[in-house]
Image (tube, rainbow over all chains, first blue to last red; front, side, top):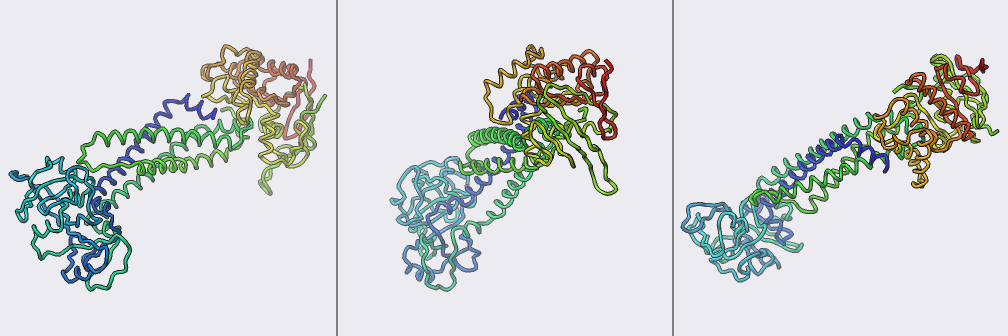
Length: 354
Length: 229
């Protein structure tokens, strides 16, 4: 595009300035999206990674795993359903033996032979887990925990050995420690029952009094603070997109207004509206793609520089969808300008001194 | 000689009822290839509207308008645009060059609205600039040029699409007497050299002797003025 490119080359400063603001907008959008994504991972990644599709929880627990408690009788009835596996969950804190520093963590009891078993990144296979052994999320490493460490569960004072690390296993902003159901009984006594039963397939449940079935998504949404956290961040992101749309519209519109007399002359010389519109769109696309690309670069750089305790997480899908949206927003923003160009009359070029 | 522009009983009105204004009244005119015509008259006499119709920017309210053999009396905006692109060259008041294009690119631009052969375009642009004495300014931007040079670039640009008809809207308005005369001389030379037609709206009586005939417009009607020389 001859005209578009020559103009950008000539008015470098102007276009670099607009590009700079677009880079900042893209960076802000991507950063907040990364943060939202990271916080989400911190809060519910353990549940999201479960290969379960739904959970059976106690009624009146608001589908919250922590407050759900299945009675022994309910669990007994539930077990007749094939493919149901128990899940114990308790928020607690642990410390290294000999240390005073406690850290919050989420204890989860699972059957290592069943589908809730986590994937081990480092250390001992989960199927060989003994009752006094646990595997924990990688973020424990940041707190100085190492394989073979003896952990003290602070509520019961009982100890267990950390034998493996898992990845992205967090719940309620705390690393998850997975243990076997036997280990659970060892800590909390033989009579303790489960918080929920997990199901992998859609099965018809026998009607059991006092329980209900909730999808994984419902369980995630019910995690305390999750909806509020994601809601406010999503609102920020939406607003950023709206602001981007307006800022870009105004930029392109002002650029176009400055060139109104040029467009009149060009039309008199035989340029079609289509040619001029293409020229503007080309500029917008070039400017946006370039700025967004720099924004992506900055975001990735930020991600690499941030400490891993910072809840910041970007995925290619997230980046691509944000970039796509930004480019769409920029094109929408240029529609106002395109309409203005359409309305320019070639006659304006005649009989005018400027 | 071929007729480049033919106007038969052309009128142009704006508005209706009480706001009705008749800008051009029953004007007939023929311009042949090789003719250079000057159009003079007070402001508000309809010169701009006349020029807009001759330049396929406007269609008449009534009458027949034929440009380069094509009857455009009731042509659509799209057809008018295509006709301007192919057959008409404009020289605007105060040049109206694009500030971000070099002199050479101003000329190349004219051919960009359609698919064109780049090599051929560039030689054509170079040849035109040479003929108008602008070859040393080829890679300069308009802001670096003097008023006279700008107007010369505008003339070169107007000839770029090899039009049948060149229309100049007060090309000397922003120039001193010497520069103004030079610019009009250039238009006259090109008209003779290429056997094209040209119409120039002007207030500058010192350049009228360079034209073949002078038309006088008043209150929307045309009168022919005989040159005294």
